Image (cartoon, rainbow, N blue to C red; front, side):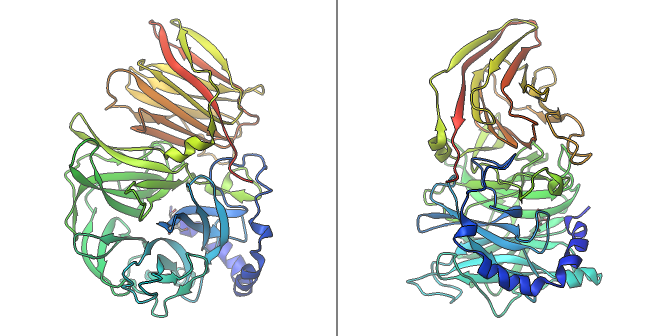
Length: 523
Ligand code: FRU
């Protein structure tokens, strides 16, 4: 079911007081409300971005400018559940430590502000700024609730706004909407980037079961040039939050284009998920000969992720929303709701003639990890288990190397919670089971079964496993990010023991096992 329908009721309740609240908010965002002194609530992530208070979903407008990474996000400042969408804003020098900024975009007469992207218009093609002070331009979807409630299909349109002070204050374009709706109910989430091949702007827009590509010379007038996807990829749900970029295949000069498409529902482990396509783009049309559906992250809590425009060294950095529409509103947090994934660098590898999109934590995360010099080699006999005591509660990094393909891990605490996951060499898959991991009754579909991730293209030999644990999330990266699972967890107490089980008839060897503390990012 589409997310929007869930929210009509909430909107109806707040709609009457909405316009005056809008004004209040501008005043309410003071130095005080931007302090982080509350980041101590149960389940509050300590090294992932979460809003100071209230509801957040998709990352929006990821752009780097003047030594600063901007993170805008879907935000509802009046409640911890989804409501009339604004763009929240935070900035960072390293994508790890964040500073909260005032709300960037408020709803207006054209509608709520849904997901979108941001560019730096260096040549001032839009005329919103000057060559000396180029505008930052946000491109987003307007969602007109009245239109949806009236049963129309044209209630999503595309709008733009600009900032001449590094995203601190914004002016909406008086000619909005820049793309009107041709009668497509789901018509949203514009991703805009500079198209080097044709020297113009390209916009990706999702339209229900496919993506459209539009080009423009000035960000204001757009022309549709192609479409992609009616027959390709997964279609268990509507297409959302597209992104596309070129990237070199590791260790070669070969360049490919990667297209990310989030879908909800229809992910392999249930609810929301992000698929990718590897192909080519000629400036107008995206093509691929990929014949299987590929997923960026097989966990249940990495959705609507997109990448940064303009990262200086050309790195492709991804941030996802660490939740799932199946139960996003029901997670057991009180003052805020939802966090982002750790920012991840994307890379493309050719393994056995197959292109694989890898995602792995950005290097700056290492700055907040205090390695204790306790790398150990462990040997677990056939059919035996070993308990490793954890020193750093739920704010830790656990990593090790192994050439085994079957092993079971179990994070435990003194109140009997148990989060189990591991590799099953017989079936060539990774399994993840949070059914007994702590609080799981938030919604029936939160812990509905064992999650599975095929490890079909894992090379032979030693691989590394890296786990980031942050109070209410676990991110697991296998073989440098070739296989990744991100999940929310709500243990009743910190996990204090990692049980490693060897269910095989051969000894299990683990090398360089290390647990390190990950430091809090909030002041
Ligand atoms: C994805 C999404 C987008 C939409 C936004 C609304 O999670 O449904 O398609 O723009 O959330 O908040």
